[in-house]
Amino acid sequence: MLYDRIFAGAFLVLSGLIAWTTYHFNVPFQYEPLGPKAFPLILSGIAALCSVWLFIKPSQNTWHPTKEVWVKILSGLGIMVLYAALFEKAGFIISTTFVGTIFSWLFGEKLLKAFLYALVLSLISYFLLADLMQLNVPVGILFGE
Amino acid sequence: MDVFHYLALGFSVALTPLNLGLVLAGCFIGTLIGSLPGIGPINGVAILLPLAYSVGLPPESALILLAGVYYGAEYGGRISSILLNVPGDAGAIMTTLDGYPMAKRGEGGRALALSAVSSFFGSMGALLLMVIFAPLLSKLAIQFGPSEYVWLMIFAFTCLATMVGKRPIKTVVGVVIGLLLATVGIDSGTGILRFTMGIPNLFDGVDFLVVVIGMFAISEVLILLESWARNDLKLTPVGKSFVSFADLMAVKWVIFRSTISGFLIGVLPGTGASIASAVAYGTEKRFAEGKEEHFGQGDIRGLAAPEAANNASAAGSMVPMLTLGIPGSGTTAILLGALLMFNITPGPLLFEQQPNIAWGLIASMFIGNIALLVMNLPLIGLFVRLLSIKQSYLVPVIVMLTFVGIYSIHGDTFDLFFMIVLGVFAFILRKLGFSLAPVILGLVLGKVLEENLRRALSISGGDWFILFDGAITYVLAIATVLAIVLPKVMKLRKK
Image (cartoon, rainbow over all chains, first blue to last red; front, side):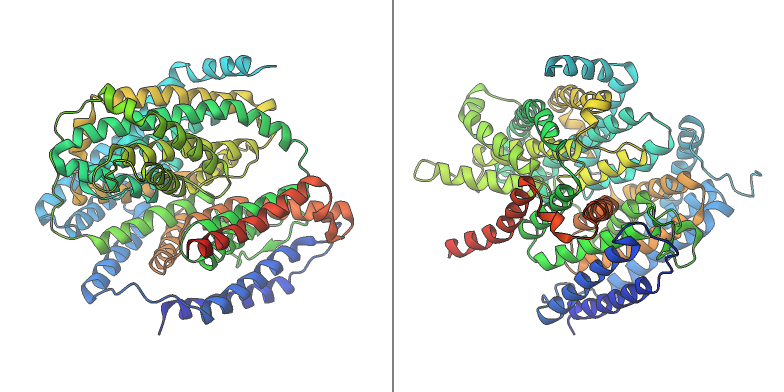
């Protein structure tokens, strides 16, 4: 199965959904001829045409990920989701140390060295970002609000 | 009012201590980012954009900083191209062709110095052209009405589709995805909600920064994860770094021609550094035919041409961005998005109403270029050492900066999750051979395109023939048709 065909199919479904949603917009008043429906409708039409074209003339698959690659990508993704979940609650320093350690380790660093690097990185960056640049960086529950 | 008056005003803006510091910092950071393996100009600007926004810089200063990063990264990109044969982005591919063979011969220093000088003359020449043409173009653009703008955007998308990438259809899909993303949120005309799926965070529309960071930086991290391998890249020794007068004389006309073609290609909406450098390289190769030439084996002309051209196109692509509000490349699309975030709408009136921004930026680019040349000749050793920086140190920093940058805008974790979703989507797109620049261009121009289309039809009372009203619309329509037909004809002639 060619990836392009899968993508084209999904994109066709999406364009249908968009057209359907657009068609059912509830527009109570409108002072201009086009209104909020026309532009999305035109776009969904173009999208549908493109998906049909892509389905008929797909490119060859050039991406052949191995199992190892999948594991790496998915674990990287999982850690980023975890980072997003922890960021506010655990605070910048703890979450960055944790996530930084794993990323550094994923790219071949020894675990202890990765941990030390991530710890130093998060401490220095916290000072730089929160104090020096006055950015909104979460402290986290451990250190109090 | 004449150009010199405005230029003087621009320098008075650019030479304030804050802005001068930002130009230098931007150029330095840009060169750093450009020389780091795997991070091209577009990623550099994307990662720094939310930081510049959250720190609360005034608009002209933020723009000066980001523009500095942009052309700094164009400079820095050549280092890994020449020494490692690894181009940082598409615009640097041509540089590897003759740059890497030179480095293999032990002439890395000569190649780096020559490319720095070519870049310098390329961007300086293009800046002069910009000073001359930008005000003219903005005078012409004042006559543009909604129909003309609709055509201009269609022309930009067409150029992008027919000239960039192997599959035009995939570029069109990318543009449509970007345009659709731009329709999310409250419709300004009627106040109804469109495609928000009941999520309050989307009522204001998708946040431009979240899309840019998600699509570029997060997908880049995933790609780095995929492609990472334990074998370390071997650095070729740099050798002595010098610019000889003889080298410069040998390539002076090459630089001159490449600057002009690079600038023109940069000005064309939708086409950027990758095409400019390819065209310049091809032209010079044809010019040298029959004479003594070693293109592909370390010919200095083959190095000077793409370097002058891609820097000239970087300046050129600023012209339509500032005067028309239509970006000339993916990176300028991000810069345009940055301006819009500061509630500044680039367009023909920018030069009249906010000359401090337009001319301040131009003046800062002059300063930045001189700074880059000065920085690049003696500091080259420092930048070269960056090439050996380990990904295990680099990636945590990238991830951290993206998360902090996005979180600090609204202080809401929703943005972080949304960013990751977009990153995964962009990763899939990239793996399927779609390029991301069209998506960003569509996103940035979506609102403008829809507004102008609706305004045009309001004027005509619903008559679509308003799109063919006036000479300029015809010119743009014909240009659009040419942009579709010409590449096909040229392909046929080659056969």
